Amino acid sequence: MLFHNNNEGKTAMKTRIYLLLFPLMSLFLTHVLAQEQAGHYERITIHGKSLEANLDGDPADRDVSVYLPPGYAQNTGQRYPVLYLLHGFTDSDDRWFGLLGQHFVHVPSAVDAAFAGGARELIVVMPNAFTKFQGSMYSNSVAIGDWEAFVAEDLVEYIDSHYRTLAVRDSRGLAGHSMGGYGALRIGMKYPQVFSSLYSMSPCCMAANLSPDAGSMAEVEKVVTPEEIQQAGFGVKAMLASAAAWSPNPKNPPHFIDLPVAEGKPRPEVIAIWAANAPLAMVHQYIPALRQYRAIAIDAGDKDAGIAPTVVSLDAILSGYGINHDFEIYEGDHVSRIDERLEQKVLPFFSEHLDF
Image 1: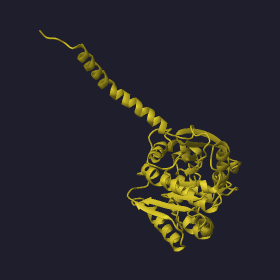
Image 2: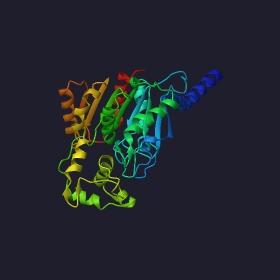
Image 3: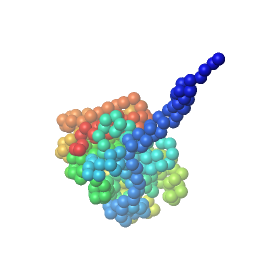
């Protein structure tokens, strides 16, 4: 006769149920933990007094992405440093923050990973600089408005007055990629009283072009309507945006710009204006300002053919003046590994150098 032990049967049943439920419990706990460790994203609108009445008709009310660290909601008595992060040309903050689907970078994931890896918690802010010509160049002109002041004054003032920030220079960092890297250098040189640390990722537009191509400029001259701007190639849009930023002309509609080549002929006076806006030319005038920074970093991918050599040149200039800075040419192209760079380089850099 075969006897069954009821206790043993109950134990076996409990074991089977536990084995079935354990993966679900683990998944649930992982999800809860991930939620607790993730920051909070919100998109707000900020009025830019510095952008009012720009001739190209871009709105002075700008969308701004704000990413609050995981501890912001719980630690209601704590104030945080702020990293102002600038996106590149033809790009926008909603792309960087994942609102428009897959992109080469996803700020929330990179920032959360950096915090999980030991970087100290801070607030990340990115304004939308997408304009009529698909990029502001973060410059100052009557055609596009004063984007320098918008970032360094309007935006900073709003964030400091609406969030729990450490509203002092030593707790503010400025960084950007591509056009944003250019903007970080440009604004950084002009506003050392606002920011204390700079990180320029793959900055564009560093060197002056003293011999612009007449054929390319002829294509730019043909673009008149908003529809033609949308349909134009990247290079044409970049020339239009550069002209709006650096060589505005309020008497030259419809774009209110001057090009460095007109009707096939170079215009030396406009070429000179563009050259004066190239950081490799500007930097010599701003050495005293750059000396005020706690930390400066520049980088580029080794396959970023048009940009890496200019970053090498800036490194040489800063070294020649004895300005301490970090410099790296890493393996990659213009848009590869940007998530990784944010997580492993940019956020740790500001974690080390900002005042918490």
